[in-house]
View 1 (cartoon, each protein chain N blue to C red):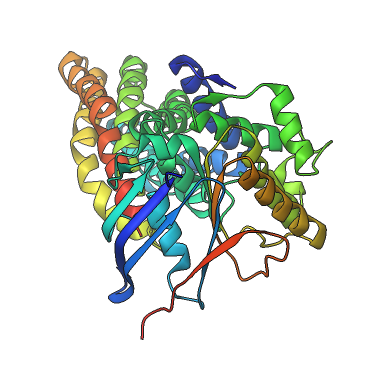
View 2: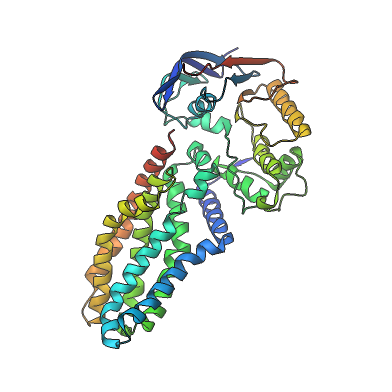
Length: 228
Length: 210
């Protein structure tokens, strides 16, 4: 019966989060398929003109990635709420901040990160000039992290509700707007050959800020949702 | 003997109905307390108040002579175990993975020996690495009950612990409660089950709102 070190604790929390997600493959694949399918619909709906697609590609990729993150986040706390895991988490002497930080990071590693890695492929499909690819990956990496944390706040607030999905979108989408503006602006500037360091820096700052502050809000929201 | 849990003037309401008011009782080490009452009388809510999951109460709760606030209760969190209606078992994980993680939540690292001994105690030898999805409801319940033997505790809070257990398991659990009390542990539980072999047994009866 040894007390656990902080590193050991973080490793145990992260390993469990990843194992649980990796064993429900369908849930894991859903947002990726959504991303792939919706992006594939745009050329069909807009017509195959390369110029048109190329100008719209940064916006399309960003909006669909954003919706995929939102879709994936709805179930972030739901199964833990239903099987009583969240009760035990709240009763734990471990800081709730740490637990939700690691949980949300684990969730991002298996949703936001794969979306980011898939994006360049879809960008080529949408005829986006290759000059924007690096910025696309960087902006989505930082941006999807911010989106995951913001969506986690909404998911924590709505976890106790039977049909939280619609409310989650209403709560969270307005908060996604700044991320979308800076993210797609970064890619558009890169495509047009301009310097995109400043929007990327802003996204990185948002990512760091959400890593530091969002777990406080998530923890508070979970306490409110379960206090009954 | 000094009491482990000391409750005075406790009251709470749910959905606008005052379920409990002015409730006072104490639980000493070695005692088993059963919360009785009809459905909807607030038994589960009372346990959730004691565990720290529900903060909408008035009155004082002391654990080891320390006044508990709804947020700050490290001693209680380390020395007690709350088992609710939902067993907190992840279906996709194996019994071992579930218990290791639940122990990590208590800041403890359990050795393979302790873990296997705990599972053997609840009659799940050979099921260590079986995903809980493949177990029956009673076996899943037993995995949750194995947590009682993972770490030294001083208070068990059990909400309907006999649900889904077969007759032998019910007798076994009553035996564990007796053993735990004999070793100086305290148990607070809710159940509609006749606790035939648990002695000595104290009861408080919640009458519900009228």
